[in-house]
Length: 349
Ligand code: TXA
Ligand code: MG
Image (tube, rainbow, N blue to C red; front, side):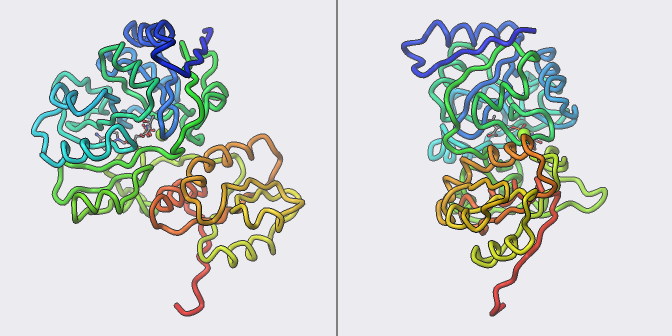
């Protein structure tokens, strides 16, 4: 299959390109789409065979539901029922943006899209190109992250091409993703609302609006044998480079020193910019200044991918703390490490 690449920088001026991508989706095809979080692998979310093709192209287990990308809160009634007022409050405040809300679904959403669940994830992405495509298609776009199952999520068109060229109809290049980690997922069908996946919208911002939020265990730690997360996707190994990853948590001076002691020429190191020179001679991926979590979020998946082009035997990663976007970045790193974590405790603890 030939994969057509569309370069769209200005959706209003490139209306023909937007419509061409929308037409593929309406016709049941698969298109890689840019969002502010990561690139998605999109299909018409109401078309069962198109949705099945997403699972095939990614090699994704069928029980892992997809989220629907829509044009705004006014789309919710079409696909969801018993919508709590909080959904509209959150949409008003954070949409378009990196927030997925789990709501009760209507019958018109196919089982294959929701993995047989009676709920559906809804998100309005903050990307002008994809919003224009959704509007032109007139259907909700089901889209998981556009990576092959198990690989780091794509944060630019090049990553999408790496994983999907030849397997899908089109890829829309809308530039690099501004957020870089996937959306935050909140389940609004339970009380109190429950965080299922930390993501591009910090938990603190949701707490400021909703008050108490329960945090699903799978969002923070590895699951015990047989335990079931509420977001089915959280149980799978994810984001993993080919070489084993060890995440080191704690104060950044200390984590840098710990890694330095163990690093050699065939060691991959994910570090904060301040420590880059400490690792001369290793294969280094800086993810940005220690204090700049927005930059770390933008760079984390590209860093994880980069090691697969090298022959490193092991990878060590400095890990930000859990505040703000740190919770999502740390979660992605820990999942990439299969929860192989070294915790360097503070001295006064
Ligand atoms: O930022 C994002 O959310 C990106 C972009 C493309 O929008 N999409 C994304 O989709 O990350 P995906 O499929 O890679 O991750 C969605 C997660 C999975 O862990 C899935 O199990 C969970 O959401 N999920 C989807 N529908 C659900 C539902 N009804 N109940 C619980 N979890 C759900
Ligand atoms: Mg994914």
